[in-house]
Image 1: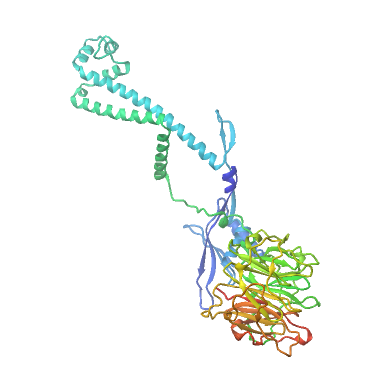
Image 2: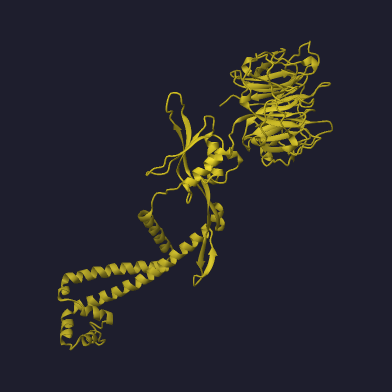
Length: 608
């Protein structure tokens, strides 16, 4: 519609009136079902053809989620009932129907009119220009009408003046008329310019000759005086309309209001914004469900429904979450998100790609997935190191990036809004360095970074100055020999308060040991320090190191992914809370001696 009004040529999207209703169960064995009920159809849409189209789409499995279709229309109006399956999402099915059937159509328009002096020149109008032409037309119409009415009123006032003059000398008028041989002579006598008391015009003389004896009373003279006063007021109004533009505009407004009150009826259609009624995109047709995204070191990616993994007890081996048919198919990344989220894929070489979560193909738990180059143009020499789901790009949020060698930087989140599958350079890296972590934050948050040797430090996010996309950043913490950054996490305000008993730090080692640490164990320090102990390693696990140091809540769950692709989903509250110097408990059995380790830990937020 916007294009039609702006250019004079385009279309208006017309959508059916639909309602979501609950169909009550018929008997004890059946259950209540949800149905989409159509009560109005777009202009020129045939109901029978529409029902046939919907039935064909369901039979061809081009539209899922419909269990029954029936026509309940009667003399009271249209009623098409589209009954849904138990697990169907009404909004998704409805959007698919709008996109694939005539429940939503486009009515084309062309604002063309014949213009010019003789009305033969075609001209296309925009909405604004058509309104301007109409208002100009109404303005000229009122001016012409006023000029016409002024002539009529002036003539009547002239006649009234003649009648009043005749009534003043009524005896002489009667004598002149009685002595005249005919009507023409009587008219000439009344128009005689030598008679100073009369000397009427032809129109006035005719009006006097038409007077009846009953109109020669004093009462009739008073009526003529009142009429003269009224006519003088009308003449003044018409002359104002002919001279003053604002008076014409005020009269136009008054007439428009009268027309609206006289002819206006309540609107039968409903006007909606283009976001709610315009062209449907892929997000309108896909449920915003929770999913798990898995990326393997062999360069494969897949999306699985979160419901594929039920919660398990602490210490179990878990379910297989990916295929290990090849040695390089170990899990590299695993996280949860909503299907409508925009995913920022950060590679180890500092390139960012952006796509929607639902654009990643769905695969089973034991399937390998699809090669990343079929989804993103990632080079064969590069790998995805971090993935960040973003629901909304806020002006008050930043993205914090951290590298393996401990460099950290903060960039406004808005700088990544237009990131697409073509890729964007977001960091300058030293030789041998890799970009491994990416998190959202605000200036009110704190940043927690941990090293692989069990050290951790916390500092304020506002101490990081926002930089551009291609900057290198600054040092996050100081490392000892053979140490490097192992994880980074964002802490929200007041997370270190003693009153807070829901938020903890989750520390996990490669051998499967973990614990929760209360935030009060870490106090904010200056950026770049060595940090304090976060976890102590088991002496038997030689070569153990930290793989996770994240902020979690009691109601959260975690997905533990091993190098060999074993996935365990556990409740955070089942992991005990211990001090910084404790070694933790066995959270997942890992074949650490034969090379298997915890490679990734993903937080599953509690349902709202």
